Length: 262
Image 1 (cartoon, rainbow, N blue to C red):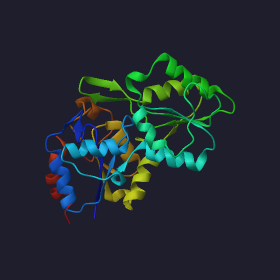
Image 2 (cartoon, helix red, strand yellow):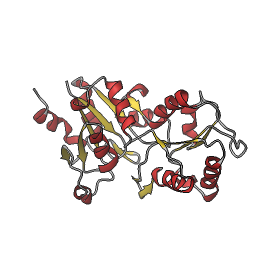
Image 3 (cartoon, rainbow, N blue to C red):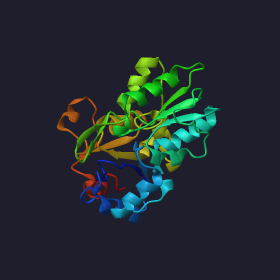
């Protein structure tokens, strides 16, 4: 049986509102026992908050069905890093790293890694410069990026995501970031491992032509683009060709029955 990977923001909801038909589409997938997993580069909230947010929209999942960059980052740090970790993340997301030794903000100077996610409006020159200074210490800490998404669509319009800030730190320090989120290949491979499915049996459905569509295709996964969220018509002129393009996730059940039924 084929399987599905769902992006969240821009596919199932936008801001605090569910995309029309999204709850019904997910319910249809659940009722038909189609293996599925939810992926997101969101680092402004812990998994528990995302699960509650979805439940408020009529989409009921468990934390174990939600793969986030924070989950992948914790595993990578446990396997590769020894020492204190500095977090450049919203306070709410710190809970995902509670099992790791965390540096005291503005005090610790010698750390083993810094983790960068979507700080949003909390990014200031001072916070970015502190990350820069920590990365310039010897021995050099690891720079861990919770995704390289360039921007996302909020209720008030487009907003910068973590990618531009990670890129600034890479440029200034000469460090190469370990990327643990879309569109990084290891992130999609982690999703395939959880699903226990080969890539050619899996479909990714997303609104980001680079992070969702190109990223999934680089992992050998078929990718379905939806015309909601951050989608723009110009996305279809970038040389990245989705397996299919739907008006929204609400069209998924009908498309699935027409194109994947044995």
